[in-house]
Image (cartoon, rainbow, N blue to C red; front, side):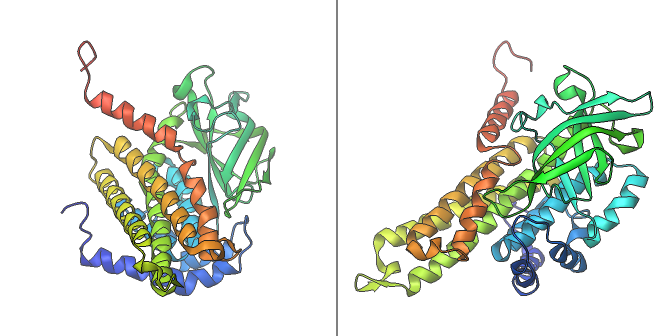
Length: 379
């Protein structure tokens, strides 16, 4: 089946998700407090079975969930995505005891997960982590350092934390740990950010962890992180496509009804061409996201490059589409509470998190050169 052909079942499911987001999730989200974890919203996502779907869905279905929810309720989309990002390492690399303790609670929305990779000095360069894991009397480690820009912090119930267990070993000296939030020495604070979802910093002061807390193998945590990001990068693109589609839909309605210069806005060629460009870019981004997700599900060898392309194109496209929508709506779109004012704040962060646009370009170039080694290079 071509990557762009969803089939009737997935097409119907996408429409069902949009309806659920509009009818059941958006009213709950409107009652939530910006910058705080919305546990009522998570509970409803759990009741609808969408959080449990995180652990059975392939990359394409994950993208469909994120795109569809984003069109009608970005808060629900983000709540679902952050649960998946924080819990996927447990699902993919956790022990039976770790999975049994945490995954059912993630699935019903009663436990909040977080993915703690970034640090004040290690954002885009994830291999430069400085959070240290010092051996602790041979029975485990003590984690000391800072994490920053962590979604769902400091309110999460557990964190997937990446720490340096072998000094000066680069990516090969990082270990992933499952860290419950009640461990002694772990504190955090909320950060006031442009985007409305919760983001915070963590301070770890000799926090104890043992071999039972390791996700995967010691010193192999970077592979845990990159495997998670390879899955979620296309779905970040899907989130962006959903926002772009919402902005496009709002613009179509506005330009169809708005009277100006003796006619409707849509009758002005300059406006019509801008709307056409918005639609063109949105559909191109959607197709690339679906193609990258399908490649992941099929186990294709070029997933890192495809994921980077999808994330890059979709997030840059969404920024353009939302900005153009604001321009065509005029001042009303800047008023607090307007859909486009909300999307304008939401759309900026995805171009940075899970690998900034510049990082994605670097990944794409690296994959291209690796696939086509030149004379004198390893083949």
